[in-house]
Image 1 (cartoon, rainbow over the protein chains, first blue to last red):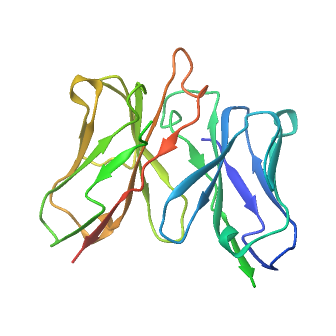
Image 2: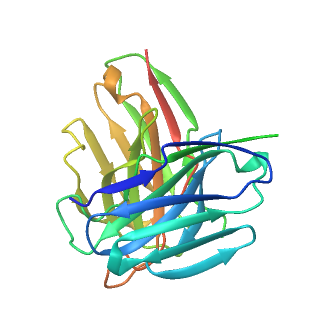
Image 3: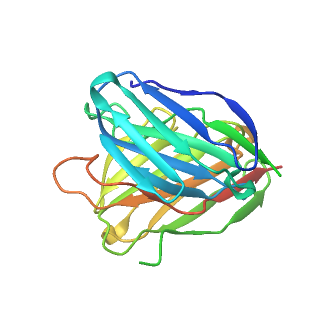
Length: 113
Length: 117
């Protein structure tokens, strides 16, 4: 099945800093989503971005589908940005468990005041 | 749009007991997914419904697990004869889609956290 690798696994920053999170995937995709999982375990949709660039406030994301990677940018970090950031993809091949999202292991982000 | 709703939020049970979880998707969504997340890992796909039809099961879904989606609305996930290894967060997601499984984003509920004593 499709493989998803996220980097870095852990990131500790001071409030106000900027960060870039990376997601590499091994095959072509129909769907790519970025999620933020907060300390209560809730998965918050950040972006649906199988290709192109999107921005939402301090967050933006870019997916270069031909090169099989996506980047999540967080600017002017706040303590509420802490949590785990997941990249999840749905490959173009169906069946064999491939109709559900495949998640990376996540980037654990800690923003210190 | 009231979001994906899951009940209960927490379930504690003894090993060997049966448990059932419920998921109510976003009302206009025809696709419903179940995932399992263990500590320190990303969610893993279990199964997927399009309307009332269960179209895909992953190898993680053992014979002790069964999912239903009667009438294509809410869904239930039952685990029979629970084991310690079943302790996890069970997440439900829904999306709207037509021809292609991946052409709309999936929206997740808050999950049911299962603890096996």
